[in-house]
Amino acid sequence: MKGDSVSTFAKKCDMSETVIRDYLSGKTYPSLNRLASISEKCNVSYSWLATGHKLEEIHDTENDNVYSEYIHRVPVYIKQLPTVEEAKTQKYVRGTPPVMNYPVLDGWLGHRGLDSKKLIIYWAKGDLMSPEIKQNNGLIINTDINEVIDGGVYLLEYEDMTLLRRIRLTLEGWQLLCNNNQCETITVLRKDFKQYKIVGNVVQIIKDLY
Image: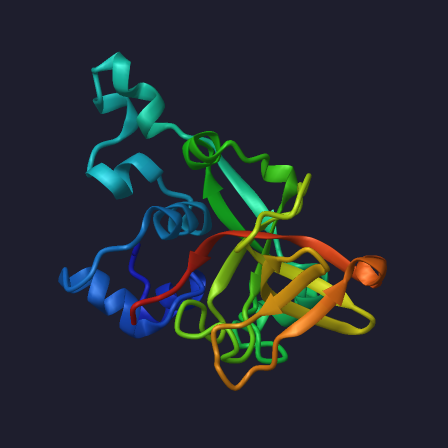
């Protein structure tokens, strides 16, 4: 922490003091994505954070690629993007975390067969997809859509609204479903497909335990 207080360090990392204190006490441990974020924001070695060793101290050349994975930055969905000034406040902006992009590891992208340039992050709103997806869970969205997969969760735009729904394919068209029984199913006929823009499908849910 280089002499920083827990409060200062937490702000630098865009995390709460509680989370940082839990990491320091060993109560919880950061995910790989959070390690990548801390590494970048604090200008320290990712391999040192993850293993306690600097890259040059690891002599097994077969494992070099494990400790030097490239970090990609996934941009926030354009309608939720804060300004630079808003992002500096370290406070929620319009009910959304003040994050302009999110780090993902090259190895994960390769494993999933995803292109970082086709990904965005969307901060979920409301409880319509709860308990699977809750308020302000981060959703990695793949915008490279070749076809709609039955049962997949998609981010859609309709007129001035943004919708997060599970799409069920029918002979007549789509059914837009949510996990909350109080949410009404939306039926979209084939002739109305063009009224809806599919932004992309959810490939990962990011949520904090604390």
